[in-house]
Image (tube, rainbow, N blue to C red):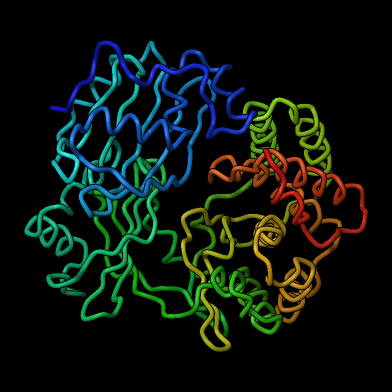
Length: 459
């Protein structure tokens, strides 16, 4: 059973917010029913929590990852730290005071011990549950990775003879606690496969099989799956991650033209597009309204601005003709691999039938958001023009007003990204991103990017 800490807690702090920007301190004060919220948002408070619980254990190098906040309900934060020389992944969820029964139920789930002792423990006074990887409340199968025999048996069930994983090392590529874990299987120094673990809500094992490689586009083949444990395995696609190429300044307009061409092929090369769910304008409008509501929850100063922007987007959607093509659904620089003149696209979990401008808007939205954070990166306009030129090669030109509409929608979605990824200057970036989205709907000239001064400003 999980460890329990009760009684007077050393972390019942209400006045010290040194590591938090004013917007986060204000958020904590607005959520009195989430007494552990500060621990989730403040690495120093989290370190104090661990040291109070793990007496005599040295915890170093705490690195916060991302936050998944449900206003008025809960907040989950992920951390990576060093304990006795080992890298340990931990996540902590702040619950409502009234959720004690739920916390105790989750705390009592089966667990495996690790570098921090118990696999999970909770703090009653703060309504907090701390979970240590490979334990996971919604991905219980991850615990099998801690045992060599159980891990081999699990992977043999997934691959069914297509690949022998017996000697493979499991390398974490990405982890969103209680949602998804992505790992590479490395053997003799080379990656052989990618394995993805899902929760029940996001598990869609058939989607990637609906897309195929073509002249420029490369799509990984599925190597295996396990419905019982919600696992899908794919071949390893070699290539240079576009995100890294852009950050380092190595990416060229020629590379980005090929990315645009690959996306155009994706929109026309699905094997069985009828198998994909359809994104309707009504569902998009509902999503836009929810996004504006969330912006207002995390940063009330921008609530009216976000709501007005959402109303404008929804009104424009009402007059947009319905266009359906197979789309990626979550296209961004982390999903693109460059290999010569070919382009690999990965992670089709959000794929659907929808307007192709959704993919282009998503991709360019991230590019506009990230440009100001990385000196030496190609200007956002250069990225935009090159991708749209490559797209035109295969699918013809994209209507500017339609593109701007979906780019504005993407920017509204991305606006609170800095809050989720723990950017200390996220309020200023949120305001700048909303301003950019407004200018797109106004038909004004789109400037290069969120200004660098925003990134350097104090929160």
